[in-house]
Image (tube, rainbow, N blue to C red; front, side, top):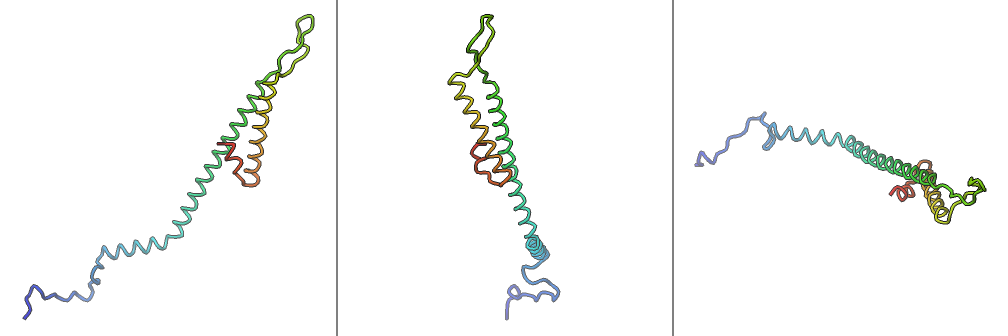
Amino acid sequence: MADDATVQAEPPEDAPPPGKGPVGTIHEEIQKAIAERNPEVRAAIVKEGADEKLEERKKMVRTALGKAKEARSALQKIKPKPIAYDENDKVISEGFDKAQVDERKKHKETIAKIEAALEDALTKGDYTKLQKVAG
């Protein structure tokens, strides 16, 4: 005859299967709800990624605009030097020396590069040049 300690009683008919108590059922429901929301999760991740890229691109545009403004300001600060005077010490001729000409050329090229990069980015969606000029 079997020992009472080894005899197992039959569970009631309405009892959940082994390992399926209220906690197991809740866990299953959670897993089911998560699976049903996969499209929402995907959409949220895609939106986050797009929003991050948007912020990155907005920052590049702001940086490029700031650099163009600096270059224009520097260009305007380069003033011609007096070359010739009349008998009353009035300037009758002005011009730029070689260093000033080179500096002006550099600023003009910078402005042109930035404007071309902005044009490509904002009209064609190509941000490669903008990324280079915005640093």
